[in-house]
Length: 198
Image (cartoon, rainbow, N blue to C red):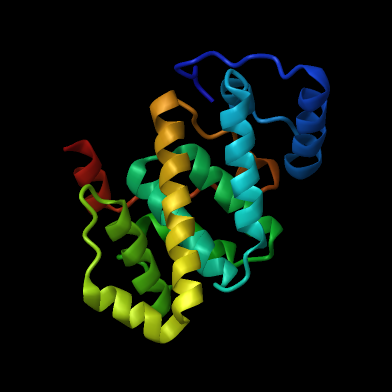
């Protein structure tokens, strides 16, 4: 991880000890990014709390939500979220070979038609302004149902919050995937690299 735009603080007090313990048990270490967010505890607590609640939702398939979050991270350029979500996919027993392909999903042949629609929806939601169409929502509703589509949409919205915040603050990959022996994520497709450069 390179230098963040706001230097990390030491996690202190009882809450700091609890966060360190939770992070160490979950990730094997305390992410440096937590120190950046430690400057504003209510924001950190709200983000962590919502993230934990989001992980308990069960109306939409976990792999679809994971791929959608990675699609947002790849589009926005958040190496932290790609690395972290790859690590989480591995720990949750999801298909990590597919997860590695998310940054170049258009060129890859490993995704089902539904997964491709989800990845396209995640990118369309993440454009400014969003480019979601009535047709894409209707197709996803027919395949997933209303509750699952609402859940997926909210996960994508949260992914935009976290990826854009991390990118703006200079929070980058901390090597979570490497720590559990996973190969690095593939690089985004040429089309995506060109779009982010302009």
